[in-house]
Amino acid sequence: MRMAPRPVRRAGPVTRQGWARRIAIALLTAIVLLGLFDVFGQGAVTTSARTPAAAISVNSPARARGGLLFTTQIVVRAIQPVGHLRLVLSDGWFEGMTFNGLAPQPAVEKSLDGSMFLGYGKLNPGEQLTVWISWQVNPTSAGLRTQDVTVLDGERTLVAVHRTLTIFP
Amino acid sequence: MDLVLRMAVVYLFVLLLTRLLGRRELSSLQPFDVIFLVVIGDLIQQGVTQNDLSVTGIFLVLSTLVVLLVATSYLTFRFRRLRPVLEGRPIVLVQRGQLIEENLRRERLTQDDVVEQARLNQIESLDQVKWAVLESSGQISFIKQNG
Image 1: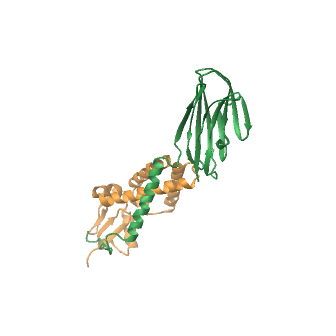
Image 2: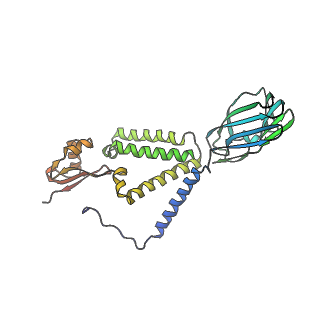
Image 3: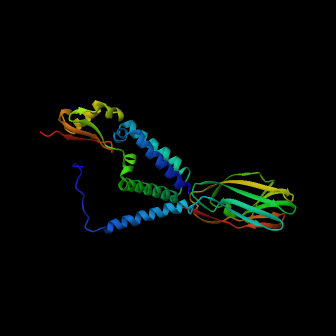
């Protein structure tokens, strides 16, 4: 170690600049930890609801970032006979989002007051309908969206879930 | 969460690659090396951020990168045994004017490479060299013979 330069000694144990750097690194570490705990998205969250007539569960991210692709899974289980099953997606599902695809295709599609109505016909007790929807978040659409899903039998509401999606800039 | 994990995995992989690649290749930037590094950067970006176009994503990736760099730096500072693994060891190439062929082979260096570096350090002949050491940074340091 003869060639090593002599260490430069600081005036005190830790300078103000040293503390500022430690705080900055602590803040960056906090951002990383928040990211690991999925605070900034886009882990999927399941929201469920059940009534004597039907049950629904929606699996989709509650937080997302611009540009990200994700899939929403909606599962409806009939407890009582459903003659004209209709799924109603609130406008928050489509606002600032690119709709990539939907499976299975509904027999009827209708837009009313900003909400999207998807008609799937008959569902017997115990039967289950699973709908997959693919999305991409538009990069300029930061903010909070209400993403409700309502299950109707004709005009009668059977069950509904209330969700929100936070989109980070 | 996936963004932080992807960045951490890629960081460890790049660290492994740089250790495998050899220090000379990384320290000497020939035209091909520059293109190679740009291509690697582009491939890494695609793998880490994928189609994330958000500012939040940039904050997450850069924060993860800085935290990992600081952690690696701290580990090499705190634990002496980790230094050869993370940074590599200095390797003696010339001892009292004599080339150590085994070490040259190990680092894929030729006599011409060492002589070229000696000339760049204003050393006329390897006979004037007491020690030539390939440092962990990839640079060759020369210590001249006395007199």
